[in-house]
Image (cartoon, rainbow, N blue to C red; front, side):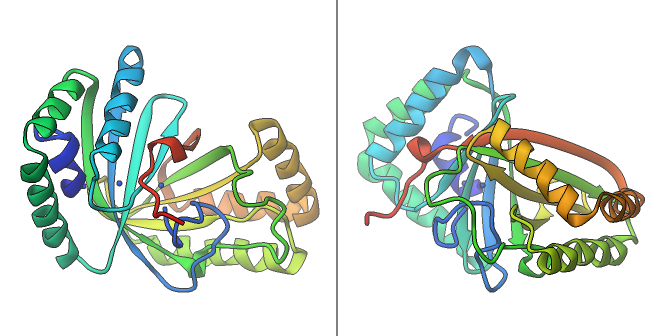
Length: 255
C-alpha cells in the first residue's frame, strides 16, 4: 500500500478480511477492494523485518490489515478500502500517526532499513462470482496454517474466456460438493496486467494435498483435466506459491 509504504517505507518503505476471516473459502457476498503491498525480504533479515512489523502494530498503526508470507520470503499486507478515494484518506491518517509518535517512527524506519530488496504496491478486487465455498467447510477458524496461491497472467483479450472457464470450475465444484474452497481476485494496478490470482489452503501442506487428491477424484479426473487444459490456454504465464497466514504480523480488530 502506498499507505503502508508511508509506514514501512518512509526510507523507501497490506492476503484479507471478509472481515478478517482469511483468504480462502469465498466468504464474501459482494466484491471488495483491497490495498496490497508485497515486500520481498532478504532471508537473513526476516527476523529483523518481522520485529519491525510487530513494533509498528505496538505503536498503534491506525488501520487494520492482514499479513501473509510465502516460503520464498515474499510478505503480503492487505487493507480493505471502500474505493480509490480511500487511499488518500489512509495516507493522511498515516501521516498524522507518524507525526504523533515522532522519534519512535524515525527509529522504526531505521530498524527496517536493509531488510528487503524491493516492494510493490497495488489494488486488487475480490471476485465472489469466480470463487467457491463448500456447503460444510472442513476447517474451523484458525485451523488453516497452509496456503497456496495460483497466479494467472491472462492473455490480453482472453479475460472473458478465463472467467467463463473459472465459472465452470465453480459450477462443477458446487454440483460435486467438493471440500476445498477458494477466493479469486483480479489485480487492478501494480502488476503485469491482466493478472488474476486465487488462494486456498489446509491445516498443513500434507493435509491440503491429500484433500486435493480427493477433490480431483470427486470432481472427475477427466473433467478436471479437460477444464484445466482449457484454462491454461487463456494464460501467457502461470505461477504458484505456498506459505501461510501471519496473524502474528497482522493488525487485527479487538474482539
